[in-house]
Image (tube, rainbow, N blue to C red; front, side):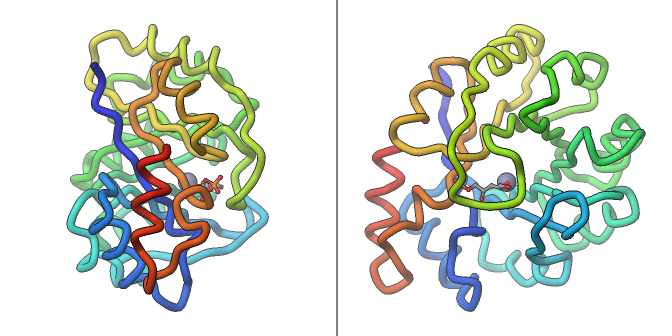
Length: 217
Ligand code: DX5
Ligand code: ZN
């Protein structure tokens, strides 16, 4: 039995209250905290950068899982290491040298993740698996929370077969909710990112709603 982890995305949290929001989701049972970094260039939206991520660090007691939706990546790797990222994930579509990027992420002392947009096949990671700790399968086109789930079950199955017994997580990001989560777990995922499905209906004043939402996933 795989140990399924839930990683709420603070993209759907109250942007004026990140510290309290992080503490609330962890108190309610979040396994990891997923942090979506967007640059307004690789994706058509902007969030926050390494100074903000560094400010989140003292609030995160579990795993700080940083998803970079930026291009280029390499000039910022040391800044995210300094900010305290545990897992740093870069998109394979973000540049021509993902191999170098993964080496640099590990070289800076972090776990290295590769994210795949919906249009990118599983085979794109075939020569990267020995440099990788996590493959993030996007089940939406990145840039926004609350989008409709795109079924990537066959990609997830292919990845699970390619990974074999290597200790590599398969993370799913986008549109994960109580209906779609069983599909991706069945296909082979073990880390479920969820933004809107965790935060909806709750707040730092009613964080038990976050716990109920997580248990439904
Ligand atoms: C999308 C982000 C996701 C997003 C997921 O670009 O990478 O992490 O927050 O949000 P939901 O769960 O609402 O689809
Ligand atoms: Zn994400």
